[in-house]
Length: 246
Image (cartoon, rainbow, N blue to C red; front, top):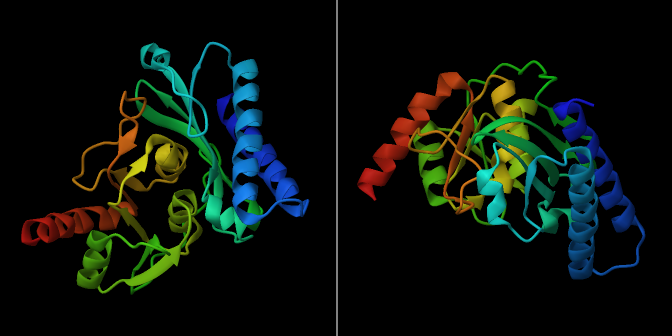
């Protein structure tokens, strides 16, 4: 398999493992999240170390190693993005498998196992046309104040949703038009989704317009914007205005 085929295959298998664990009926909600994370993480990490032994690895559920900072190629994975949604048997959770090369998110796959969908950077699908009234996808439990303020100025409808991967893929799938997040994330939350979004011709950046850079010593990423290119400058300008006025 080439790199993207591998990413998609691993995300698919991990998603199926997660559903099998959940459907066993053996675990309460809290234990289910831990078991799902551990199961998917063990599979992904062992598989990547065997299939790409010369590459580095960064996973949310794996102890970090500073050795990855010396590597040009780093796989960045999130075994369960949206543990709460996974445990509640919702569809808005994801499995992320991405590859960063020299800090750039070059390829990836995002599986949405609850929806039976895998989106990948080597198989872009046509984007549906944007509606007259835009839609901004936000956290279903804690929408970022900057996102809600920008949506109000755009006259955009808010679309509450679970995991970061599900929100990013919603823009590709025609469920939303803008994903603006300023509540803080980590590299594994966005590497694969950003790689897939870029491959579909979308804009992806920090909310000040600067590029997203991966495989950093500090894996914290404060903010993210994914949207259609034709909406990017207007959203970035509104974010700046909202921050100046705050």
